[in-house]
View 1 (cartoon, rainbow, N blue to C red):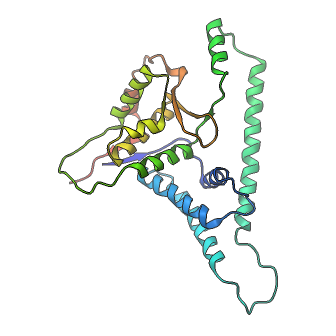
View 2 (view 1 turned 45 degrees about the horizontal axis):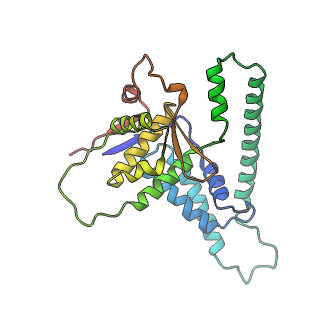
View 3 (view 1 turned 45 degrees about the vertical axis):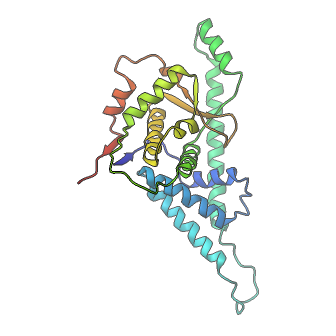
Length: 267
């Protein structure tokens, strides 16, 4: 069974590089290219498992990293004139610096937009104000897609390889997992993403669970947050969508969605 997932918003290759640099607390001007390349390829493997439609852009960056890595592994030419050689990483660092500046400016503009909205607040009732104050007691950071893929990779590594195989068919559907997640969130205020994966019996169930989480995030039914960057991801029900919509349930909208499709293997 193959799952094809299309996302409306997806961070690009430079986003992934910046994420790895921050995650490993690396100096952007002295990138350990071998370590970063290996981690980058691990993320691409996870994306291939999900059959994401944007992997091509990431493969181009992977080829660039491999090229830089091969250049740095080559010994210096002893016959070449003694002059300062250009660092193969320089061009990549320039691209990262430029992209980082644009991203920081975008965040500043977003903060200004949020501040501007606060100048003309909507009229809300006392109950809504109390809920906002309650939520503001603990600051949460919204998890990025790369945080989610990192959690998926860790879950897949924990699943032991089966040494024996039985001729039994195990079917897992995205709709079924969506119902399970939403049902759990009716009983609990939040769920640890790792706890969802631990219930899975094999890698296929882990992947289907992960796709269900992404689909619920896309539909704005849930939010994935962290107390601090790179910490464990916690799943909350999106309070905006807690009440059932008149147009049908989340599962119905998921079934009708053209962005997520399940393709059965041909015999």
